[in-house]
Image (cartoon, rainbow, N blue to C red; front, side, top):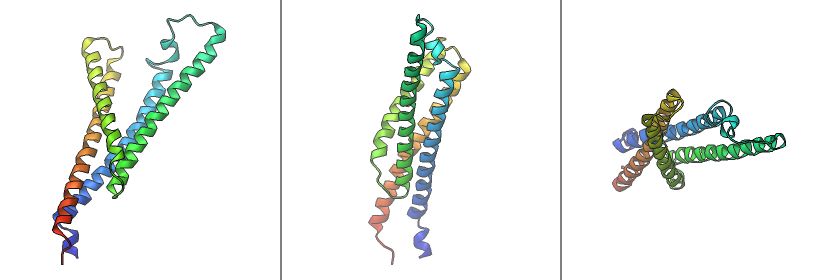
Length: 175
């Protein structure tokens, strides 16, 4: 029994299932970071209400409704992004425990495309000299590259788990 539990396939399966669960947890935590980043930029940074609407002449009676609308729309978008991170992360964790494996991968692939495009756009902004705060932009690129590596890790772990599971089933039960 001990030899069966410690076969090459079993060791690999445990390793990659742990990596998949860790990637899912990391993706959820980076989703939380995204919420914090957006919230901070809404009050202090480039997306602050005053900066976004600085070129517009706003009547005093329109100021409060516009501000409420701005924050509500930003909150809904931020909540959607965070829920997407939770869905993908929990899907990876569930798949690492043998649960359903497909739904989160499609959304993770779409997220990977968006993150890649964001990195490319940020790099273009960095080297074109149009970025206002270079330090923040570099930090954003590093965090986005971390997200990208987590997503790649999810795909790789899922692929190896599937391959090792097929090998294990092909061997059949050890007697």
